[in-house]
Amino acid sequence: MSTLEMILNGQEVSVDVEPGDLLAHVLRDKLGLIGTKISCEEGECGACTVLVDGRTVDSCIYPALKAQGREVVTIEGLGQDNRLDPIQQAFVDKTAPQCGYCIPGMVISAKALLDETLHPTRKEIEEGISGNLCRCTGYYQIIEAIELAAARLAEKGGLG
Amino acid sequence: MWDEYLFPASVEEALEMLEAHGGEARIIAGGTDLVLQSQRGQCPAKVMVDITRIPGLDHIEERDGLIYIGAQATHGQVAASPLIRSRAGVLAEACGSVGGPQIRNVGTLVGNVVNALPAADGAIALFALDAEAEVVERRGRRWTPIASLYAGVGLCTVDPCAAMITQLRFPALGKGEAGAFERLAKRRALVLPILNAAAIVGLRRNKVQKARIAIGPVASTPFVVAEAAESLVGQTPDEERITRAAKLAAQTAQPRDSLLRGSAEYRKAMVEVLVRRALWRAVEAASLQEDEDVNS
Image 1 (cartoon, rainbow over the protein chains, first blue to last red):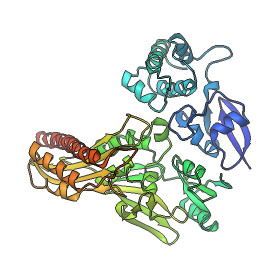
Image 2 (image 1 turned 120 degrees about the horizontal axis):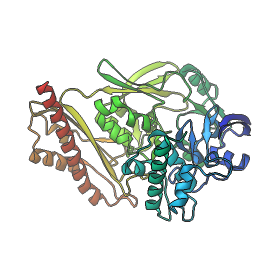
Image 3 (image 1 turned 30 degrees about the horizontal axis):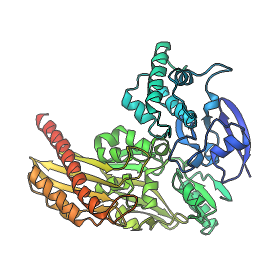
Image 4 (image 1 turned 180 degrees about the vertical axis):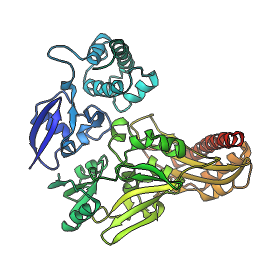
């Protein structure tokens, strides 16, 4: 047993983990953050996407101890109190979620993209979510939602 | 899954950890393949020695005409590197087509070599670039051509339980030289290639001075088609000669029937298409470079 210490959604967190634990399982089973979804468990669908030091990773194949001392952001880290993050709000406004299972990962990938550029081209958006599969195939609404979020954020001057 | 997860602070300490566990420990970098292999029982090692926090292994730099890439450099970092994009664009293209962003943010290019798969996009470009790897063992370090490290599908002669690759190097593409990478797959992301091809062409006064072509997966290792490349040397790279070289590449390639990737016949035909496209783009880019040099 080892102790994993990380900054999780802005808070210092310390949790006991096994050497072979993967980050997605630690987040869901030990820390109760079930917004991060597990689907393919082989790094092919992106449902488990979280940010580690600002970059997207597939947390279902990411050894938890790699996050030692790092900043981790999950879907629960977006928005405040009962207010949705602008990206989440845009997904709602464009009715981007269908079954919803891929959406936390999609939103996190969108966040990584918009943290880097506030004026993404459509191609950059497509590339930004190319590691996330939606089996409802609702990609157009998702892309439109990210475009809407980008436009709103650009107006406000960034994610802050 | 594992008994211990260790973070050595130096290459020496990593090798000591490996030795102390006598074959039970192995090197892990990004782990994007290794985690799956462990889960499927294909990796007997129970102790992971994670090299991603060792200082001095994250470089992507040029020294004396050679480009050096450290063992921690991820596919994403290589693909985005201005140095790689301008002096080894073929590798940037290849690394940019691996998996999706999440995989590229974690999986390393050196890991691509250690995994020794004949379809690995990054490795195909490295073969075209004639790359070497620095192998470090307890008894010392040595540079060796990456081709010498491939012993079969998934078999690398660098034993991850006793040694590691610390960096790669290859000549930066110079005046009149350029490369291109082509890939055939069922989707544009998150899928293994049906075929891939990397070509490098060096031009002087519109004649081919050097050419290298690597393709995968058509053999047990990334496959360099020397005859096809040599057929271009000394020639003006026009449509006829490029088509002939591509046909030659297809004749040499021995793809197998594959349920995942398609029939041997189909893939052999596609080798010609991919090699022709890669050569065309490489020739176009190389002649642009040559023109710039003439004008400047």
